Length: 390
Image (cartoon, rainbow, N blue to C red; front, side, top):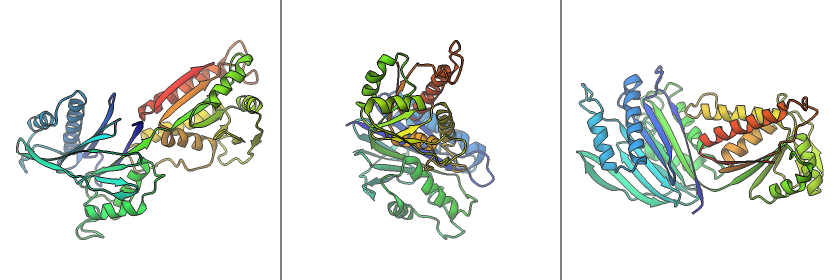
């Protein structure tokens, strides 16, 4: 099965706490992805330390081939004991998804995961067993493309307790809500954002507990090819562009000169859009057969800025970036971070004489740095990235 595992999470800190008592660890292994959500006892610094230790230990041990029994025993024997409650653990959920579609789920005292297929909840048959006196729920199952798995800390099911809801937002309420609002075009991050925003509203923007939503969405592979700059040798134009056009998936052309060459080779007119949707981003154009046509360095620079912001805000509900705007940089960013699973960059090494002294190729150096920086950011999101130079 050729699938891509898209995982994102967002957290709310307990009101007036600087540190979150929940911790998420996402580990991408050679043939699988491991996601650990740990909820430390209490809140603040102590809870953050407990959750961090738990998620790091479990994630590292499982990625190195240890069994769940060994990981749980290590957690129980490692974490300090709370003097007040005499408990020595943080709760946790573990999900491992293999590229074959096989999944392994483990839950210890966290709310049960919510699994969606075709937008509707489907139940998992879990087995119960005791490890070192702790009741563990586990399940092995297979997923299909577009399935969604949602993990949460107990702050989600306590949302609104003592405020607008007497008993909090129960698990069944969370399930019913996401079934109602979910649409197939929602990314994993958008699912987390929708649920966490609802929790924050129920808490009246003053969360009574650390709250984390982790969403894992199973997707079919989606390739995007991005051509940046014309080939160094003009005689290679037709070869490179035909190679570009024959690639699977969506296609993006960055650069005015590049767009003109693509238009000429494929025999399709460039239709320029003169609307400055965002004054800091040059307008886009249209070429039949190309999904997005943009200006070069300025648009790529802005898109790189957006991608970095998208990653840096990965676990915060505040100041989330809007990728549904229609300027070239926003559209390029959305294609790369939310719609693609693998990206091919075809980078031309020609120097644009309109931009700099031919003896000092700043233009190509800038393009090269932008593309390499973009590659590093996309790799952090688990994308597969390939760069070819011409």
